[in-house]
Amino acid sequence: MTPLPKRKVSKGRRNRRRAHDAISLPHLVRCPQCHELRLPHTVCPYCGYYKGREIIHMEEAKE
Image (cartoon, rainbow, N blue to C red; front, side):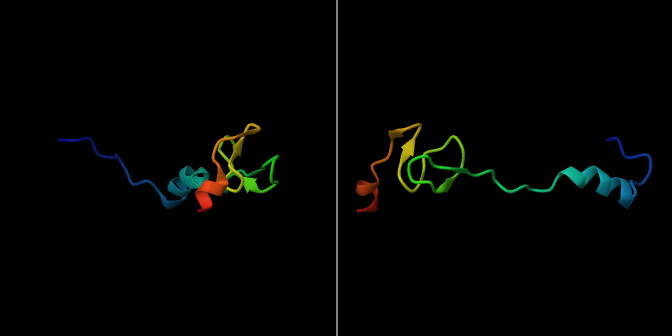
């Protein structure tokens, strides 16, 4: 037989435990090349640059 809770967990205790489970907004930074907002540590989806180098050729991707 599996273990069971000794007594009911109240709604207040349950909700206090879940107080830090809210989803936060993603942190966005400005791209130094095109100044659009993007996720940090990723290639910019607008200009294709990462750390000052062109990783994705955007002219080819648009065609």
